[in-house]
Image (tube, rainbow, N blue to C red; front, side, top):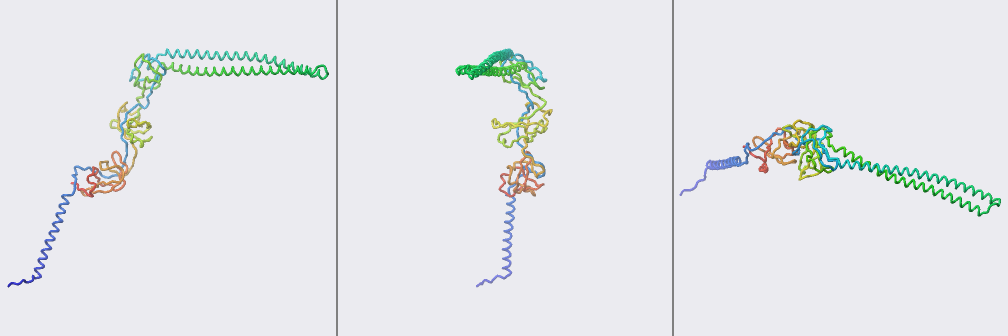
Amino acid sequence: MKTDRPLSSETLKAKQHKRFLKLGFAVVSVLILGYILREVLQPGISADYVRTAVAERGDVMATIQATGLVVPEAEQVIPCPFDARLKTVLRDAGAGLEPGQLMLELDDSEILAEVEALKDETALTQNRIEQLQTELVGKTNDYDSRIEVANLRSEHLRTKTEQQRYLQTISAATAWNVRDAELDENIAKIEQEQLVAQKERLIAETQKQIEGLEIERRLLRSKLEISDAKLKQAGIRADRAGVLIWIATEQGSMLREGEIIARVADLTRFRIEASVSDMHATRLALEMPVIIEVNGEALSGRIIGVPPAVTQGRVTVIIGLDQPSYSALRPNMRVDVQIITDRKQNVLRVKKGPFVKGSGQQDVFVLKDGDAFRIRATVGTVGVDYVEIKDGIEPGETVLISDMEDYKHLKKVRIN
């Protein structure tokens, strides 16, 4: 019968070594397979589909985009000075004008009749004033004479009263005689005082009538001056050099006072009227710098007015130009406008792209050794062409500026 013999130590060592080799091979195989799978399955992006930019130092300018219309800096709107019919049109729209040049004539027959009527009313009022003044002089002279007579009579009666009092002392007159004399004297004084009071009332009443007529005369003269000025405006003239851009042309038509009958513009100097979404209204302020693109050239300007009205969700911004007489400007030309709301100088910046989601902290990808690594960065001012980087990125680093929203959960993305 065959019996088992224990294996030799050499054999056991050989078997153990063989198991270690197999185990090591398996581990290495798994590691190699994992590496291969990681390399094969790791998310990647073709370099042809990503845009990159190098972080550098420079200026960043934040703006509000708008569309603008070129309009004359100065435009004279000429209203009709009075109700009248259009008599003659002497200039056509588009004609150049010199100061004082006649453009059209109005029928002035009605305003002329009004002027003559006011002149007559003014003259009648003046005559009435002079008549009252003359009557007042005559009546006051009459009162003065009557008052003088009353004074003399009062003085005479006062003397008689003194005589009666003296006679009473020598028993040549009675107390009744003295009493009668005193009554006559008092009556004379009252009559004298009444005459003085009547004279004063006459003067006061007449003076009030004169003052009322003088007020009426002043009003009539004021109306006359206005009507006379209107009459002189029957010939409509330009008060400045410019171009007649619109004029009423229907001869014989009835025009109302205040109705616009002509527009004259100075076409040598212009400004810009820009239309901005009302969502930016709170960001707008006077004196904000502005850049206007005209035929590929950039003109500078500033905001000089922001009317408060909002029309269909748009706000109008008035822009003054630093070169209002720029040769390429034309009336009603449409231009692109950039209103500068913020400007940073010599800051770290990266070209603007879909990667930026506004100001503040956000994840961005930086290119290193052919791979894109996610980092946390702080974005400052977002400009037209560049964005400010406050921290997280160093000068010279390459940033992926494409939209990386689908990869934001990864720390690393392979660039093929």
